[in-house]
Amino acid sequence: MAKSKRKLEMNAGKCIACGVCEGECPVDAICLEGDVPVIDYELCTGCGQCVEVCPTDCLFFEGEEEAEAAAPPQSAEEVAPEVEAGLTELVSAVPVAFAKDQGVWIYIEQSDGDVHPVSWELLGKGRELADALGCELAAMVLGEDVDDVAVATGHYGADKAYVIDDPLLGQYRTHPFAEGCLKLVRKYEPEIVLIGATTLGRDLAGAIATDLHTGLTADCTGLVIDEQARLLRQTRPAFGGNIMATILCKEHRPQMSTVRPRVMEALAPDETRQVEIVRETLEVSEEDIGVAVEDFRPDADLDKPNLQYAEIICAGGRGLGSPKGFELMKELAEALGGVMGASRATVDAGWISHDYQVGQTGYTVRPRLYIAAGISGAIQHRVGMQTADTIIAINSDPEANIFQIADYGIVGDLYEVVPELIKQAKEGNLKEKLLGDGD
Ligand SMILES: Cc1cc2nc3c(=O)[nH]c(=O)nc-3n(C[C@H](O)[C@H](O)[C@H](O)COP(=O)(O)OP(=O)(O)OC[C@H]3O[C@@H](n4cnc5c(N)ncnc54)[C@H](O)[C@@H]3O)c2cc1C
Image 1: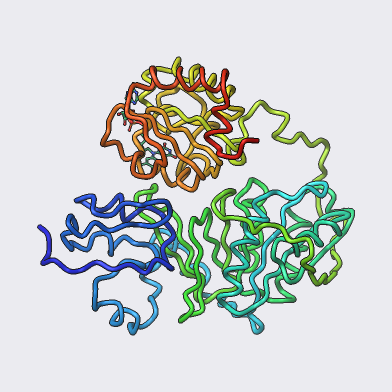
Image 2: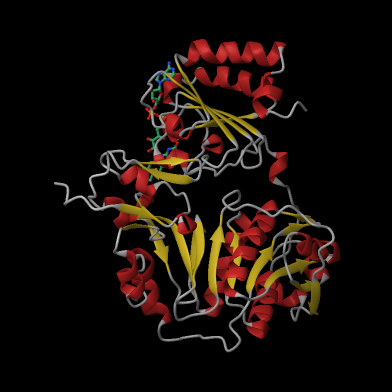
């Protein structure tokens, strides 16, 4: 039963647009419009369920904010139990507090001088965190012939680049890269280290965190600074994605997180921006490594869709009715010069491979245009695509949740609507109209 009606308020500056409040509200009184939750006071009963689940505490009741702000910082018990349970016991015997304890560091993932875009995205987020802490933003650049990469980190927001340039770092191997990072971290003692949640990043982050006896929060979807406690609030889905947990690393340094590609936004590069370069050497020999790379075949050789960095995605859901429906979505994607995407329901049904899945347990995407056909708009799907510039939803149910975040909604049978879009894309300038840029 609803409690007596209290007035819900929101601190929009803290909101990370995770959509958890919207999914939790029993009377649909909160809905995300773009990145901002909008409260419908007519519907709100003041039950407080949204306040309880909000991972960044941006929702509160009128008159209750000050009381909470004055409360002591969170205790360790408030940290997500499944993460803390084993970890506290494991690491509390070896507390590590850095004397310098300053600087936000981003690991720059590169291969033959090509930087993975997630590193630029993390520099964008890192800039915001470093500014909130009043400290420097630094890049960790390891590789062979990486001077250009180091210079480019300045264009994307870094104040400083710590560089280890060595032929042993020509291709990724865990041991020399981890040793190089550990040397830098131990010498300069950053407060925060962020690494892309790529295959390489996951491998490296685990190796470094283990050696430093510090915590590592994987796949964060939100990172904000708690300025009062000077701690990084690391938010990520937990318990199979049913709640968002905010995790603190209070007693060990550095605070470490991995973040999936496309979750954060890169700054526009500014080529006039300079970075201070600090060079260090790698104290590892080939004999120490024990692993040799015989051959390297990049993913690009495989016939996989590049969903994460696609400009246009045409995604199909269970409303397609059968796997054959994806032939139609493929035709639309090709006509628009985009790629196909899918909801988990279709992947679970075996209609399409997981390589196409968008959402919490699939890819996070940020295209200029996302067309969702026959997708209901469950929160787990929306968290993976809601930052698309333009969302077009096609659904026969006018009440479908996907319409809450769509810029354009078409209520109708996708088997009537999609063929018409394909026709217009092939014969006219539908792509240009939808992207609104005439290119
Ligand atoms: C831990 C966890 C993680 C998850 N991760 C993901 C994830 O990464 N990605 C994800 O997508 N889901 C994920 N899910 C599942 C999610 O909760 C939904 O079940 C799923 O997104 C639903 O897929 P859907 O929209 O295709 O199907 P449905 O919810 O069944 O929706 C089908 C829609 O099609 C419409 N429709 C039917 N026929 C037509 C027609 N002819 N024309 C137009 N519209 C039509 C219907 O009105 C309906 O809205 C996760 C769930 C959990 C619990």
